[in-house]
Amino acid sequence: MSTAKVVEKVDPREIRRKLGMNQQQFWSKIGVTQSGGSRYESGRNMPKPVRELLRLVHVEQIDIQRCKREDFEVAEYLKAEDPELFKTLRKAARNKLKKPA
Image 1 (cartoon, rainbow, N blue to C red):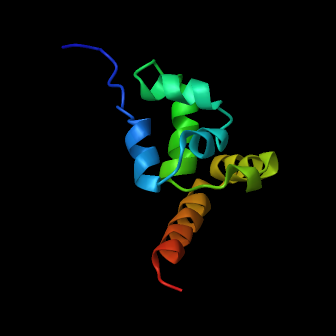
Image 2: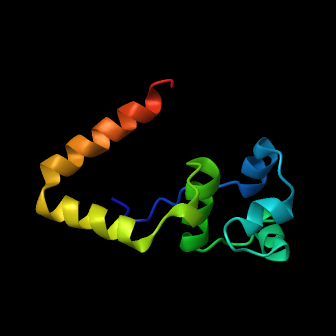
């Protein structure tokens, strides 16, 4: 049995085009220069942190400028101290986001 890692294929050019953004708009939201983003779109290997930022910002539509370290600290604390409450709250939040306003 192979132990090779399965790398999720991310096509940033396709995501950017679907969003109707130019390279400057798209890449600047995650702190990458237009020229750097162009290289990734041309096939250069994208580091995992950049790939994850791309996913969070452009796929999950998370405004990372509004996220604060304390938000993550609270979530991690709750997950460690009361995992059942964390799961319940996460499920409730997801359900609320799915319901139309």
